[in-house]
Image (cartoon, rainbow, N blue to C red; front, side):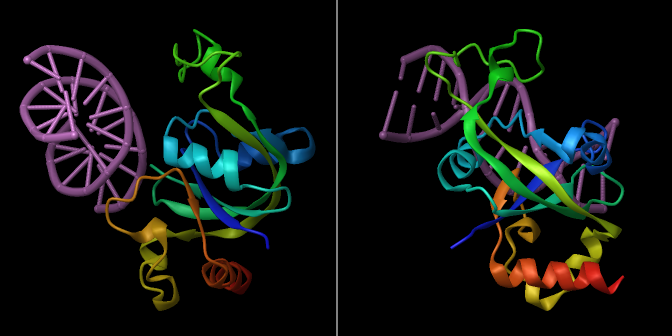
Length: 156
DNA sequence: GCCAACGTTGGC
DNA sequence: GCCAACGTTGGC
């Protein structure tokens, strides 16, 4: 039983267009420093799981495409790098605190599904992304929600 | 740039 | 273990 996910990124830092330029369109999703998000990546993400990519702090914020998990969790080594923005002195190679997965781009939506529009879709009412105060950068998505998103993306 | 909603830290 | 202070996220 595959799972479905949504992962946020700030396009000014790393956008889906950046992902599209990567070798094999694959990247490691580093920098997550939230325990709940980490647990999803470390414990629940399996190869082949589908992922929606979301641009936060964008104008407007939007779901911009899809990816899939191609490598299951392993330690986020950027946490050990003093010069990294997400350096965490409490994480070490012996006792890693943070984890990441590799994802590969599947599709960049022709037109981004913008947040204000998504809010109007009844079928997405319960979606974690649309809940007030939801800040989780890695969150589960229900099958029904994923299907709705795919349909919306295909319609454009 | 503002600020509400969260998450984390650390004193007690 | 409580909770105030502080830091971060992210829409607007």
